[in-house]
Length: 144
Figure 1 (cartoon, one colour):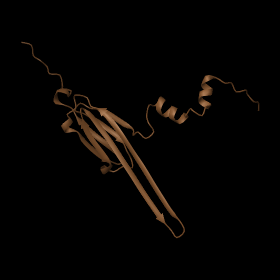
Figure 2 (cartoon, rainbow, N blue to C red):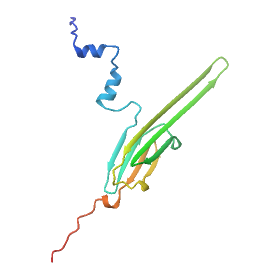
Figure 3 (cartoon, helix red, strand yellow):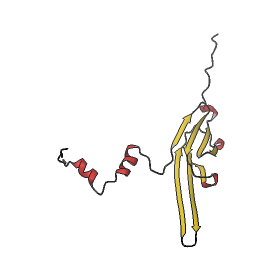
Figure 4 (spheres, rainbow, N blue to C red):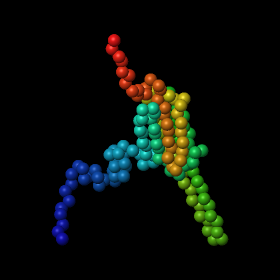
């Protein structure tokens, strides 16, 4: 086995410094997504937009969903505490998780017809489109 001399460059200096957090670099810059931010799928159909948000570990009562000025606001907060006492020790565990997500709705969404369900860790929304925004079959016009 042979040794290879380490070459210092501005990039290697940055990567090896105490001020550079590689976890933060790859999580926020390459994927532009925070660690605790839930994954989101959006699908458009002829009649609606379907939104799925992965939020396992929550219950329905943990969510707060509002629509304000054309923006769908989703937030959730959950905390649990577990304590176990024995003769010579006490073990206490707790956890806390929360997130907040905002989606700007297109003008074609009927805000009064938004429906939400939560099942198996997936928060789903059905955002119905206004009649004028729906895709219609072409109408054939007879020429006289």
